[in-house]
Length: 390
Image (cartoon, rainbow, N blue to C red; front, side):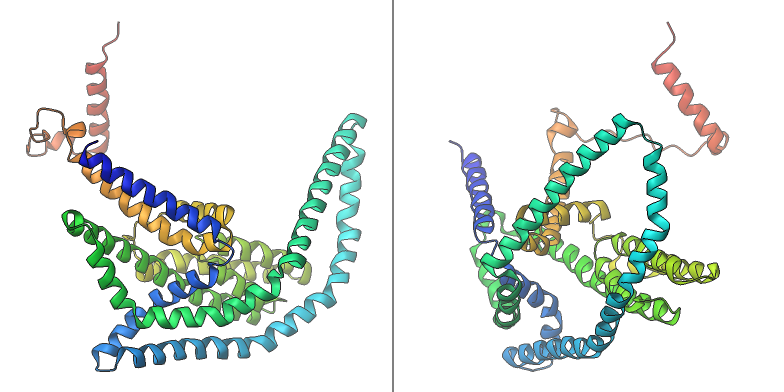
């Protein structure tokens, strides 16, 4: 067995063991992964305080205490408002049900009357099958809640374990990085460091930037919808801001929910248009100002790739998979670009002659071909020359 094959087997088996460990311990990894994420996010602020002469443990205490205080104050300020919104939602639920019976049920009945007996039988069978699936899913969820106590134990674990993990990781972050750096194989250490820096730049640019975008959008949607007089505007705005971490999802969910409630609540159509305009304006500001300035165009994480990573992580590993989805997506993206660069410098791309890739002649532009129509005609002529008619 060659040395290269031994290296590939070592890294492949290491990756398989890592996935197996995450799979086996996925039910208890959430506070540790969340604590690591908080330590990663707060490390730059801690480094700045340390550069000003503050000991690392003191900087860690100050930063983590300030972060916790901001979260607690935000929760205490928003809790009464959220409580009023929830009470209002419970009070309005009977009105919504009555409206659905009065407006929606007649339309459903008219649609059912137009169906043939065969279509009715198929629809009834399909509804019975979906109802059975829904009942089974609900029963499984309730059984899990009772048997494992997810609703209480997991929340308590996150509240008490996560801050402790975040403190120790944040205090020893630089020491951990130095230790891992000493473990790197000497022959590939420079390459691994280069890729690690690329992963850090990608991950920091996306996570920290996107988190700021979520805060700004959540605050804007909550305040604007509340001023517009929309019921549950605060809740919808906050949820839209949180879901904006997944590109386009927050705006779409908030737009659909707010416009639906506005149609039910307002008699004036211009107020419905005002609610819709809030989300259109927010999406325009996000796409043209917030995301380019705070996230940047060079992070290398396409929105479709982020959505796929979050859905795949959640389906495979649950909440832990959602927490790990973006870091894993960043690592895979950086490694994919590195592999593509290696391929384009290899003989598979350049050919087995070993020479440089031939480049087109550096000729001055032809003024007759500078117009797009002339360029299109030239391309069509080249295709005709390569594939002459029989």
